[in-house]
Image (cartoon, rainbow, N blue to C red; front, side):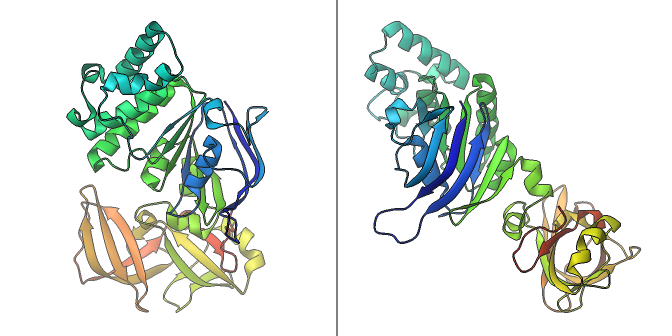
Length: 362
């Protein structure tokens, strides 16, 4: 099912400001769409509006061609998986999964077929007659998913379903959720504040901040072409380095003259209109080059080294006291306290307008 939002807005009673406004989106059939953003950005509010749990103040919501603004949740053909498992502790796994089908008065045969099919898909066949207290957190999360799957909904809505799991189990469940999504072929809308979940699971990401959409696209778009400084800082770990300065005489010069950078010929073309203006550059930690043989280099003092196995993360300080984070292969030799020379991969520089934060080199 396709989910379409036209100028959607939400304003809570008693508040002057809109929590969400001007949301225009299309989520295609079979998309795994992740709504991403920091706490309080409005992502859960948007999900609850799609579910019918929150009313719509302005705009229109469509499921395919059907306007569903005032359609009750039970009639929207959706299934929701919450952050908390919300399982009935006195019921078996089987009965928890069958609950909604029993409420619909489905036949025992249909219920049995759907529950067993979902259990096989989720690999919990051996736990069907256990109580929630007798199974692990990961298995309880699978039961919550199974309860949604048996309903055969047109849209799955998931609100941070992995946040209560430990790191290793979260990693495993990410893979399982993608596998299940591909097998079912159902439109999935998934809310999280975790960029790793978004980048590894989504076919489409919607990044929000302060009730507004910052960027919509595929995971690669967010990493390689962030549309503004907020997106650049939010996506990537370690986060992108942001350096303020000015573009003069065909060069970028940082605020305290600690860095001078000659843009690529392609970027020089788009920067012509910014001659003499304030410009901000962004560079991913892994796109610095070690050594003094580059056209533009700078020196920085290595304060802290984090060893992560295949790579090292260097936390460094420039002469003016500003900080840079640099990622290098794990086998490269560095010492804390030493001053080292680095250059730039000029093809990997992101340029932003300092006035509005928007990307310049599209």
